[in-house]
Image 1: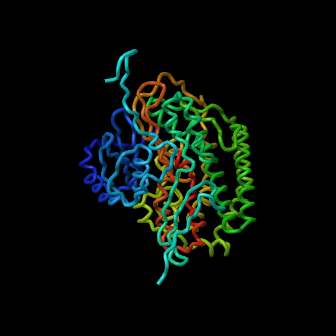
Image 2: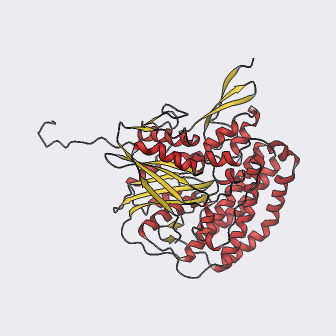
Image 3: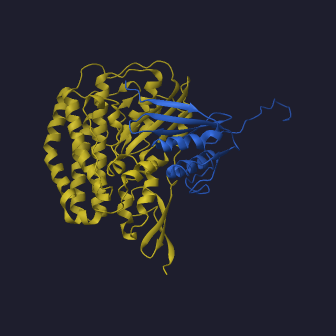
Length: 129
Length: 359
């Protein structure tokens, strides 16, 4: 089994632009931006690689309503993933170089991959508080 | 002073097998800017992973695309197998590699035919698709399916190919190789093809890397990028070398694909020559728990399947980054500055697969 080398580095949202800039300076390519909904939060992976296929992912954790700075000022092509994240997960990405305003991926149900709202189970005959 | 107008291109257009929309901002006949929109065939397949057994989901992963279907199922299986630490038997890895190369051949021949058709070169179109049928015949004979095989599973493959049949497949490829070389000669030397594609939609090596281009789009710009170099499945034992060309125009993107068809034949021949004996699957017990980013080289380029599992039979997340999605920003760059009449040919040269891109 050949293991493709992949390092995951967890960082705060505030450090995203600085770390991304470092990858750009080192000549890394942006491979993808992918979001994972995890109940009450979202993990977003920013994956980069060098020419030797050594993958590295920056991982940030955000919640509904948080603002994520766009890296499209550093990697121009990032707009496609950032608009996808916005359209499917309903997350706010600020400062995108090409902002489709929610119209890149048009789905019948808006933001279909968003975390479902937490539901309070009401006991039979009781009142929801 | 020139006037700016916006011309809508797609989602329905004779050169587009699948729907993508481009708002083309024109100054006279020249494209100044192209703004893409997708979302016409979004199926939410990734979401289904939360409701399906991770083993059954292989069949859904395969249906992400009707062309690079087999590679999708293998990449998904690779991710699960890595998380669970399953050692896939060598014979299964070799047979997977053979089918992946057959997928590449039929995908590239499909694309070469479509490109010839877009240029109005009908004979070349028919020739490419006639040759594709020969490839599909072998796929059908060994898996039962022409474009959806359903023959990969977590832990290995469902079907073996008998050694006698492997020999027949190599003989068949030897027979059609001269026909493919003749077809490639037309793409390389014919005046009509060269005139239509040389110097058109140029993407430099630096731009390709910077914008995240993958597959034949990147290799046609001189980037030595091919995930097969990392040696996944059986590629590490087959002496693989990527094909690159330097000009970064439509013709080089076309020639990379036509050359790769012949390279795929070589890989299949080498895989058959080195085919190990043994079982074709490893028994899978339990459920996956962990995460893995699996990469593969599809006909259209680098593909990523991210799998996140929590120890239950349903996965937490399956995220697919397909080559078409990452080739959209390079396409936007290629379109800026060209004539309106050239747009269909340039769009076609990224081999857009919107079904893949939207899942």
